[in-house]
Length: 574
Image (cartoon, rainbow, N blue to C red; front, side, top):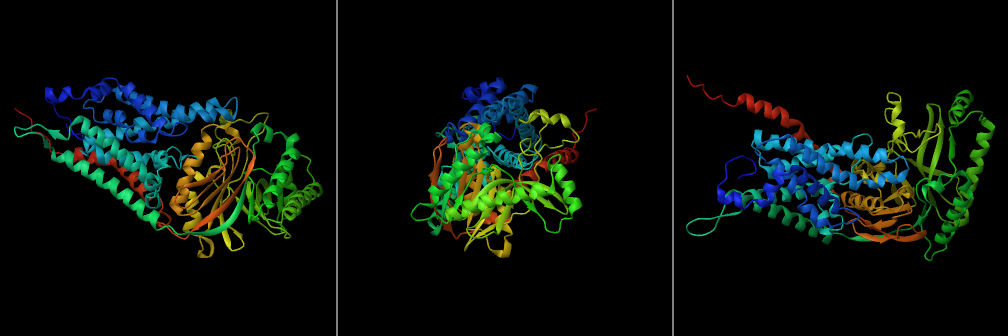
């Protein structure tokens, strides 16, 4: 049986379909099997080869001739199994975070029956072969996840292959979605061959079925071309010596970081690690602290801010706050950081919460700030991609009950301001793009640094500051690192990560993880960054594959309606 049509099979062919028959008769088992196999292909197990066949039970449901409600229930069960297992680290952030974990799993699991419905529509109504429909629809729906709320572009199928260096080079053309496309295509081919074998019997012996042979050739050529392109891009890499960057990895649990009485202890640890990093031979060109590592907020006050507006903004910070106290606090905090920078004799890139008082209003940012020795000038990048329910509450005014899904209590709510500019920072002759927290997992955001750079000069190094102490050394750390590998390949840029509790690492422009500090340890990673002078089509074209596949997803329903309207009606018999 062709996976794009529903026809009657011979008894001899039906006897060969034991596995697929079981899957169709027990769709919940089939969906759950897909979910668990797919989960096992990602960290912590990382049995990445399973991704190439994990979706076959789910896709078998897509070509079932009769659409029963159990088929969609099975797809939903598979999605729920996958997302509950994959996102279990969300519950570690707080005792009440199990609600966020379950809610996220329920929302994302809806993608699976949605994918199944669209695929069945394409296969049965529009007569599109499964091997063409499935990868397009899966990738289109994967792409959507990068934009829901602040986006969650994690657990793309392609991310499971982050250690397959020759294979992932295609990401500099298609992004990680290109690998997802290829993986689904292979899964669909397996289903095609399970439902209709490659060989058929004939009086003169086994013969190839032309349609199946063509599909095998298409997949084989796609795989060979992907590996060939990867080999070509790897052979063309010419790395040159870049800056030496010291990445600090602290090991503070979030409950410790959030205790205001521990602020001085945290600062002492950072000071000790900074001096240790600066004393290395050769001396680093930059010392990088993790996200929000400096324990007190820094303050910026615009010179042209009217006093009346300033007083009003102080009321937004805290009741009873005076301008004199706030200006004095600003000077004392800056003096501490400048003194540490001068003592180290090395520029410091620190993670910090920052109040910014301007005539247009007060902003509270999650920032990365570059301080240089003997200079009072600073450079600042403000985080653009905030974490929903962790750094802001979406739809808070309309749906105030959403605070139930946050780890914050006693009236405190996160109210950070979204940054706007992907401004790179200058470090001598080098230019640095900076991501904060999970920004290094967001492909379209990181691309902005390279697609339209200041003065036409692209950044030399991508640096990410993160605090993964929320997740208690779970597989979230591995998954965060795995996803970030693709930012290096897409933009052909080295990535240096300084992360509280880990995993701090150095990744080159080929996506190789060159150095990494163990999780749950405190230390300094001295990283000699290899510069990469290559560019990429991904920088120029962006997520063209994701948008194209999404356009197909959106066009399927009206296309099906039009095909039914244009289909000639059978004449009625008298």
